Every structure is written in C-alpha cells, then in structure tokens.
Length: 249
Image (cartoon, rainbow, N blue to C red; front, side):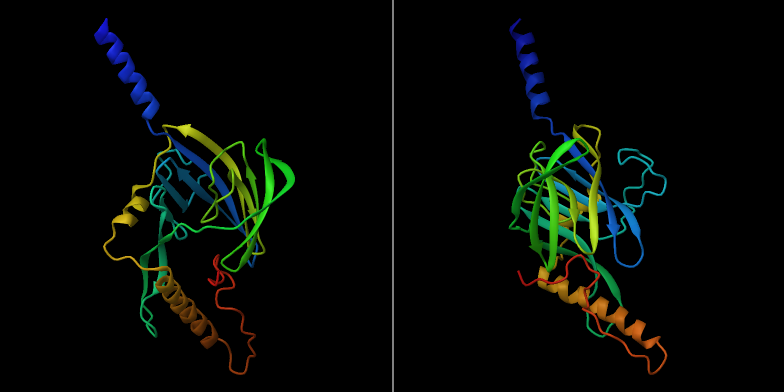
C-alpha cells in the first residue's frame, strides 16, 4: 500500500511539474506600400519564448507536422525568460563599402517599455482587452492586452503589460491575434531559434544597428544608381520601413 501511495504521489508530482507550452498566432499587416499580410507565431513556456514569421502558404495550424517550421521570413527571436536575454537572427553587412550580406546573431537584454494604460476596452477573441500606449525605438504603439491571460508578453519585442497583448497598431504595421492555445503539450518549440544562445560569436545592439544600416545604405545606393540621370530624389529616413526606426530611448 505504501509503495502504491508513493507511486501515486510521484505521478502527481510529474504531472504538476510537466512544462506545457502556449501559442498565440498573429496576423502581421504591413500598411506601407504593398498590402502585405503574414502570420507570426509567439510560442512560450515558463522558461523561454520563441517568435517567428513562418511561411504558411497552405494555411496549416502551427502544430501541424507538415508546416515547415524552418521557413522563417523575417528576423526570428529567442528569449531566455530566466535571464531576460534576447537573441535575434538579423541581416546586415558587417564591413562598410562591402556588398556581402550576412546573417548574424544579435544579443540584447529583453527591452523594457513604459506603458500608459487606459480604461478603454473592447473584446478580442472573446477576451476583454484594455488599451495601452507607448513609444518604443522611434515608433508610437497602441496595444490591447487582456488581464484574463496573465502573461506580460506580446508580438515581436513588445511586452511588459499586466496581461497578454492581443492587438498592436502603429503607423507602419498591425499585429492581431487570431488564435490562442494555452497550456498544451502538443505545441512544438523551435530548436533552431534556441540554438542562437549557443552561437560563439554574437553582436551587441549597437553593432547590429551599424551592420543593418550598412545593408540599408547598400540597397539605397543601388536603387539610386538605377534611376535616370537628373531625377530629383526626396531623401527619407534610412530606417523608415524598419520595425525599429531609432534607438535613442
């Protein structure tokens, strides 16, 4: 009897301590130029977070084995939630006046935002959400979060509110949650993103900005060189279409 009780308690312990995973699927809409709508996935548990824009031409659920989870469209993110270290696979040119584009790993501390929370509310996916605003890396954000799901996370690098962010709006793009799966043992993680933490060579935020700007300047130079002679060009900010416009904060 004592042995049966011990086994029963051990089973309860492992069930209680088994780590489950959560998923939020967002649409990402680029409002400048092409009306481009993609899908981005926030996958997280108690210790880590994965964020990626994954090609999903066949309209599959994230959990489906047929969805190629290595087909990243943008710059995927891995966050170690125990250390608050954020790792991101980015694109840039590491040497000025070079044309060699490379992917590299950025490491930075998980950003902290100062939000202004209002009493304005609306329903999203059946959850009561509250409006909050902030400025982050040069852009103004309006977010809608729900205290009913008490995770201070959201799409991309946004977070820090007392509840999960289900919608984000700014002048350049929108994120809208279209599906939420909580406490599931059927949500796969993304080991490729987790491997970012183990890369021997990682670069700081300042280095990343420099390399990314080198690439943007290269693209701009090529574009200008292809224009007919004498065409007047109104020069816009280099990062006008980037999610991170500036880094003064």
